[in-house]
Image 1 (tube, helix red, strand yellow):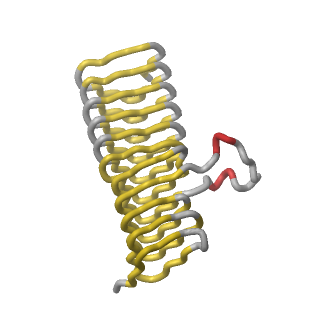
Image 2 (image 1 turned 90 degrees about the vertical axis):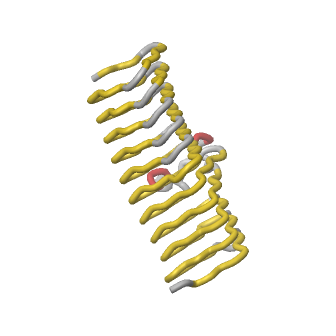
Length: 202
């Protein structure tokens, strides 16, 4: 386990088994890490490859991010694509490329932005584990997510603004703004959501 507690800069490629960032770490290069935990702030100038990533602070990358499991309860900003198997994001995300995964859950804080999202299962809205107790705290107030394109099989959205939405089964739960919907099986639109065009495709 490599633990970073202060301000550290690494020049070049970092390859490690486990890294925990409690302070501020700058990597002027790429990184290849099995298990990465970010409690402080991490900036990476090149690509990021990890098996498991847990973010409780902030991660900023200028290229692509590849991971098996991505768990965010903080801030994530990537200039490239984000590719993973499972993504759970409770916080602020800005992705200038494609966020793709098998399963994606996003509970946005503030104004989050993704250029494109693609997955089999996509849920954007209130976190599941908070609704049981009906706890209302400023920290868990739902933010908004804006996208150019969201495409998946099973899609549920809240507080989401998207230009083009494509899927098999689509549910707009609350306060969504959608330009064009293309669906193959089912679409449900809440009374407080706005959709300009809806098309059923084979």
